[in-house]
Length: 325
Ligand code: BTN
Image (cartoon, rainbow, N blue to C red; front, side):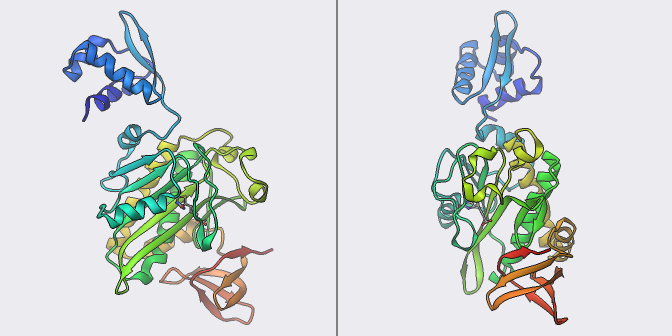
């Protein structure tokens, strides 16, 4: 652990209490001047301290930004997020993660940005990614699998994020096939999986996750106002983005391990339990044209099985789902 990390550990362990400069310099085995320098560095990074002569230092505020150090300390994973790049701004974390993957970045490498100027959604759409308001992140994966298994990983990612959202914020989001998180019919998160393959085998894949965490109603452009919402709007207070990223990585790692050991069946059950699509009449804009019917279940590949009006069970592999009344 670096001096800065040990210092933060010490102060965050008892945020109400003062820790004396003497105690800190003893624990860090550095001089009082070195302690003071580290405190100043943390101040520059957005931390706020109360410093009282003869009492010491007390942490009073952590930065609103997604702070690399705090995130690394909060992560309870072995690989997911442990190699971390936090950017102030980027065109798209997908592109950053792809470049890292091409350069050999290991599985679990995570890129997070405060802002994306060219955030990408599914089907060539744009993804609205304003500064400091959301969680815009991309995770590098290296599954040893043929390309046609990737839709299963999309669903797995959705389950992981949905569980993390529920656990850390109490907002009871549900999953809309294939990969949106909704609250009362409004979108709160989107997932975009992009893969690079060779001979039909995955070289790497990038799981892009966009969570509208702390957007206010006025932040949204008009065309999104009626279809999107944020965790802050739904919970009634801002959410801690670092805690949510850490929880999402933790859930992801647990499910990814389960998937590698037991295959897709347990993931499909978890997805079905969190789904807001199943049991509803839907129209899916499939490649062969729109299909309308009752959303029944996931098939073993992760396709959505639709019971059509003429009684056939039709698996749909990709497309947009419209929930009907
Ligand atoms: C969708 O619902 O259309 C998918 C949206 C995915 C958005 C995320 S934000 C982080 C990552 N970077 C991107 O440019 N897109 C994904």
